[in-house]
Length: 156
Image (cartoon, one colour):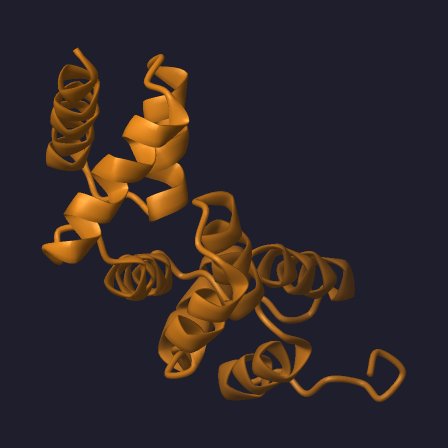
């Protein structure tokens, strides 16, 4: 009987991973939510990790690439990694190689401003939009400069 609970947890874990990649914590949470006990969930995680079928480092790097393609900045990506159950150390390692794509930032600005840089309120809204997407002020300022708008000193 006890061997059955381990097999059931492993089968459920494999099924979850067949739908989409998950962090170890995310997968463990799903197994516990489905009614598997902690011992069986831990067994399944260990088994999958040992066989390199569950890898938080590769998962975190994948999330970083995906979020970068969607036009998110470092802070938003870090938040997404935390939400998905990636531990801080793994998240920081995955973000080491991340640099915001200036062309994507300029394109996001163009989408918001549509070439009109005369309205200060619209520029402020575009800046707030980029900040909500997780971009740092230095990156936003560089993108605005590339877009053709000089930033008044009182904003910095």
